[in-house]
Amino acid sequence: MAERVEIFEVGPRDGLQNEARRIATRDKIALVDCLSGAGFTRIEVASFVSPKWVPQMADSGAVLRGIKRAAGVRYAALTPNLRGLTDALESGADEVAIFGSASEGFSRANINATIEESLQRFAPVMETANAEGIRVRGYVSCVVECPYDGPVAPARVAQVAEWLWDMGCYEISLGDTIGRGRPEPVEAMLRAVSDVVPVAHLAGHFHDTNGRALENVEAALGCGLRVFDAAVGGLGGCPYAPGAAGNVATESLHDRLVTLGYDTGLDRDVLESAADMARAMRGAGR
Ligand code: HMG
Ligand code: MG
Image (spheres, rainbow, N blue to C red):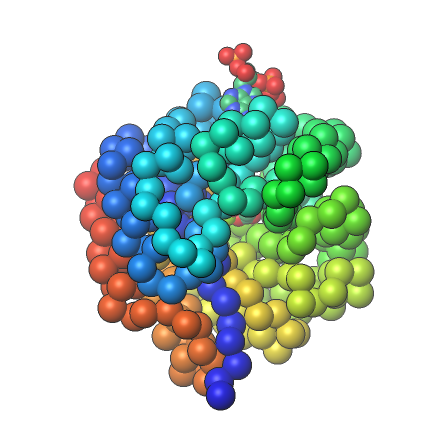
């Protein structure tokens, strides 16, 4: 039997957060409902951040409350602080994610905190989530390069990943936020991180700015990673990472994984329908 590689769908959150045109809540819900039929076990649908910082995510509570929940799917949300966690739990998020950075420049630009301050903010989020029995995922951004500080040392990425792991995150997602990664630096970074966090608990999060996300996924597969974040239709970008383009497209990643002999458990036809919806949402604004 083919080995399973999991795709964690992040389109409704990472994909849509950067869209300048306000997308209707019902369209976001329709996208998630479509994705719920594709076979994902995890879909990131919301982000409980400041609406002044990311206006597109301001209706996250309504999205989470409006979706039709499919059995076996965990619906996830970003929570930068305790307020975000409280709102996410009230809206029915099944799991949450805290998001830090391996570079100081991006940490300040994205969450208005130094790396150290961000960890202090995350501690009560983790404590409350633990008390509520909610799993917390940890993101590390700028694992290869930062739009403000330039190249990021693998040892620095490993240090931040280890902090999030020690804090209790069940999985660490490693973000090539601006898509500057190439296989060799990605492998060097992954070697450093897997010295401190078990590889079975690492995920790859590749943006495709330079068209090399699939090559980087292959490099990461070679390093033992079996979970990858992706967004249908290649939606995406981060408002605080100038030049960051879409996440690797879920349907392209699925196809590449199948060609390489892996099984994703996903329904290709449903992915195509979701990708069409996603592209229409993006296209309508341009
Ligand atoms: P701040 O200004 O330092 O914090 O922002 P604050 O505590 O002073 O709050 C400022 C205002 O935000 C206040 O409102 C708060 O009430 C409000 P005001 O008094 O001005 O009216 N506020 C909130 N509102 C709603 N929900 C909340 C919340 N917290 C405070 N949870 C903060 C700090 C973290 C809030 C801000 O910097 C922020 O929201 N940043 C989010 C940026 C973001 O979402 N970026 C994109 C996601 S990360 C990403 O895409 C990367 C990833 O995909 C991986 C990769 O690709 O690398 C994950
Ligand atoms: Mg991202």
